[in-house]
Image (cartoon, rainbow, N blue to C red; front, side, top):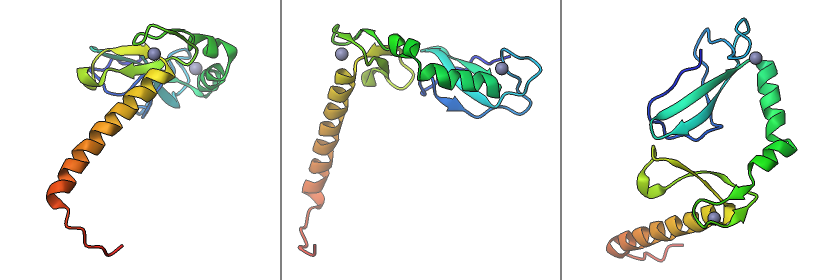
Amino acid sequence: MADVTGPISTLPGASHSVPKGQKCDQHRRRPAVARIQGETDSMGSEMIDMCQECLNRHIAWKKSPEAAEHRKGTCEWCKNPADDLRDRRDFEEGMSGRIYRVCGACVKKEDEQLAAEMDEFENSLDDSYDDDDGLD
Ligand SMILES: [Zn+2]
Ligand SMILES: [Zn+2]
């Protein structure tokens, strides 16, 4: 039986280690070789345990046209239609906040914003420690 975790910071699709003796969710008599994170919300996530056959099917699905179809929709952040939606948490809401379906452009924009904030932070540190030694 797959577990439901408590609040969790990883995203759906993440692999987790398989507990000893775990069986496949679909094939009760087969040992699970992989545990993939399923539906996730702020309360926790569902873990899907797979035998080799189920895992192979899962990998094939990820490369399939249906999976590509699954990435299409409306971005929850910019409200634009997109075909590269992915799961993303709002940084402000923390690592166990709700998950949004957002487009690649929004993810990129947020990453750049975070990088810029990091730069600023590092620059402000540099100011106090900077004694350019010119040894480069
Ligand atoms: Zn199976
Ligand atoms: Zn977007």
